[in-house]
Amino acid sequence: MKPPARHPAQLQPDKQRGRHAPRDVAVLIPAYQPTAALEELVDRLVYAGVPAILLVDDGSSGDHRPIFERLALQPQVHLLRHARNQGKGAALKTGIRYFLDHLAHWKGLVTAGADGQHAAADVVRLARALHQSPRRAVLGARSFRLTPRSGPGFSLGSVLGNRLTAALFSAITRTPVSDAHSGLRALPATLLPRLLNLPGSGPEYEMSALLYIARTLHPLAEQPIRTLHPIANPALQFRPLADSLRVLRALLSRPAYAPLAPVSCPRPEPEFTRIATAPVLRAK
Image 1 (cartoon, helix red, strand yellow):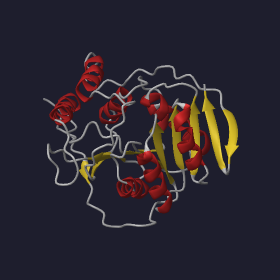
Image 2: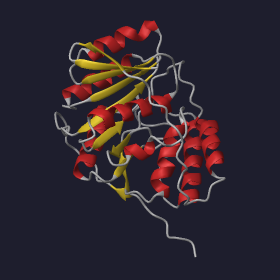
Image 3: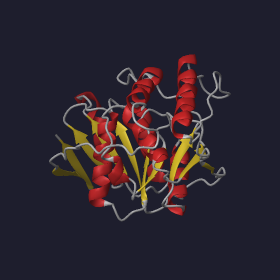
Image 4: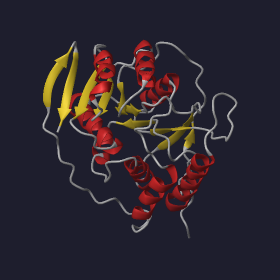
């Protein structure tokens, strides 16, 4: 007999606005060759009262350094830098490792994108959900349409890729999710050490993390969020269909409920400097 499907809890929409961010949840933003969208997001998160923003510069070129240096002047921003581009998964692991070293007594963190696809209000909403239920992971779920009412629509490939990935994910884990590609996630502090042991240094790492959460039956909820079209960034070459199938193909060789084998995650040697009141971590 097949085990029953495990449906993530559906959280109710939250109408609150303003400075309501909890004081024990950080926000982690990996960024590579960012645009003005990153500046707007960080400024809005600071205004909302987010206590710590872990901003990871994943080896961006010198032309983008002024953006990071301006944001690092804000005391809430902790700027972490890679000497070269290592991939989104590696940037997320650097931020998670920094959180565990310095903020492990907090309830957890929320991961968000730097390209304008996540509204600051939704980031804060997930932070509040984690604050209220610190053992439960929360996935921000978008509602994809080919022609949204506001803003440009998503391409047919993006919509089909997301739907196909969600269907495959549900079949593998028996945990239905509506947006398997969402990078807006609230992750409990108790879960983070295990996520560091997962494979992947590129965008596939996020899928590995979501699969691990489902396979280990960790409490999971979905929070509806706004569907925003990311600002075009030629430096980011994420392929929704190809990258997702690559991860799923690699993991299909394992039993559906088998735990993932730990892999080695080399710890970068930190070199701390200081910009204003924000510590800077340079990872080799």
